[in-house]
Amino acid sequence: MIILFLSIFSSAVAQYGFQQGLMITANRDTLICYFPVSTSFGDEFPIKRTKDGVEEIMRIEDVKYLATSYTVFQLVEYKEGSHNKQKLMQILTEGTIILNLELIINEGHPTGRGGYTPYGKPTTTYVARKNNQNFLIEKKTFNEDILPLIKDAQDLFGKIGKKGYRYDDLESIIKEYNASQLN
Image (cartoon, rainbow, N blue to C red; front, side, top):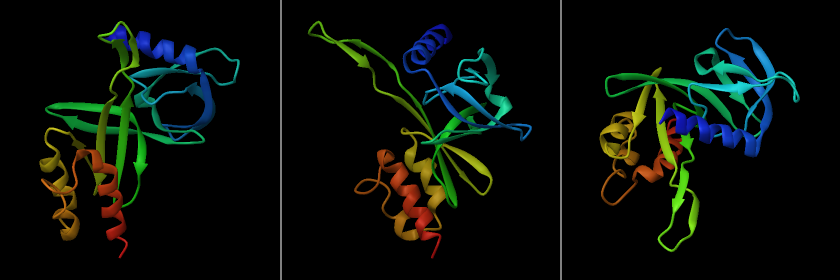
């Protein structure tokens, strides 16, 4: 699995290259550098200090933020079952609740008619942060995961479930919750 991920990651870097951005390290140093155009970074990733520079390996635990012209990633720590995890995740929304996303573009597969789908269904991981605590939000336990985060917004709380908001509406739910907290 790790070898597959590294080969996909390497081909993505080769195909899409590096982008310039700002990195804030765990030590709070700032660095303008180049890093892969990517939606997911794994445990480590290459950086270059100049556009044509030599690649260095950066471990995600040494990074606090990565910012590009179109998005910001931050190091997020959370629990998945009994395991502690950490990932560089895109910040989707900010407010009372911060919603982070890791999007992994999966490799494609042959179709039944002799064709090929270049990309499979992406894997998404959402982590919400409220009151300095991080919460993994999974599709299979969506109601259990989201309801404690929004229980203080009764109108929104009632929209979750059978006839209302679902997992695919997560970003809208968090935006609505954050807007309700401004009043």
